[in-house]
View 1 (tube, rainbow, N blue to C red):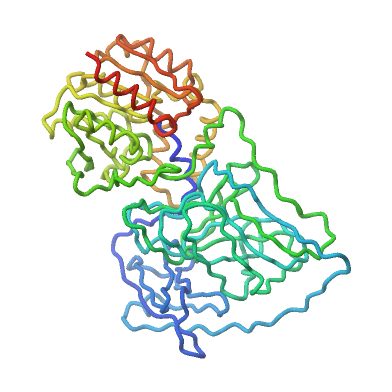
View 2 (cartoon, rainbow, N blue to C red):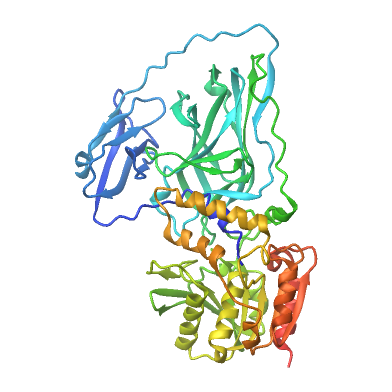
Length: 563
């Protein structure tokens, strides 16, 4: 099974509402005193995941349902919020004026004692999952205003020096964020604490980002904890690169990642611990709040593979060949209830590549070039993944994916093709070989499984997936495809070892030494196939095609090219 994307996608802030009849709302936000534009003001519909962020000139536009009754709230740090009706913003040239809020500095009582500089939050940069802010295939304005953060315990009297966050992956040329601090009420962000707008840009692909807070004179008193969040304001895409951004995180019990899709939407919580921390001069003698960084989270041995998880695509691959988004090599073919995207490379015997759950053609970026020297490579985005489309609502099944593959091969007039399937792609390849043997010449499968039980998959990981599914079901607005892709991991496949006797094609069975698919299951799977070879890649995980590409490619080529 191709599993690791779901630990990213389930922490994503992408919850775009499905709207039918829509109305365009637009306007300009100005300072009521100076009549100057208010840059990057937040615009949101009260209680709804609808809205946007104004640009540098205070201009904004977004769509809402035509029957919207809730008011639109326009806000910005340092200003009093304004509420207007949706009908007001339907005409062009509308102006919303915000009045500056009086900055009245409350009296600060500094207790006697030595000032200590302390750090609050998570200072580790390890990335065991990526808390994604943006992962859509194309840059759209709907990314604006997404907000993500966590609650950090602090001393009662302190003056902030800086804010720090660790970027797990940044596929943009530049991203502009707003830093927000809130009081905490009932475990969620409540009233904002900052009186000045703190904005910062991120241009580096990964690593620590420091925001100097000393010019803003942020003095906090009486707070034992604060909600620290970042809000997406603006981005500049990097040509030829996937558009994605994520913050380092680990699945630590007792900590939550806070998310909301727009500035007036309800906050949501998901398990995880973001790499956010604050440095402050502390005047407090209280020992109630933590005064030292929390130790890094230690995963149980059965989940060690998570250390390789760092991005929606792949941690350290730039995909210079633009696999998965190559217009010259890309094609579409209609299938029942959907539309498949595929790319063709090289010449020779057809070799079909099937990726894993939630992934795309780009997952094979370390294989396609080498394989295309010997084969005609057909790399496919599975239904509802990558650039392929799905128009159905029923649960996904490997029978459905196999039928999609058959229709694709029919459209190309192909039979007896070789297939390389990784994870979910391996499950689909086995299903195709059983249901439609005439289409398959040879199989090479990596990290496949016959059933989703503790006898086949790490039990701790299955429990983790079940918990994520429960959390997903509790969300008010679920992403249908994401939910169905998660569900198939827990419900399918359900093949038997006896059924494998029906696979006529010679099969190379592969897995990593530390794969989430148990080694005993992989060995039993290989033994049940009539014509099979087995390779366990040493010191590798479920991601052996990226961790050991030379050994992986060599093994696949040797097997497929033998007489």
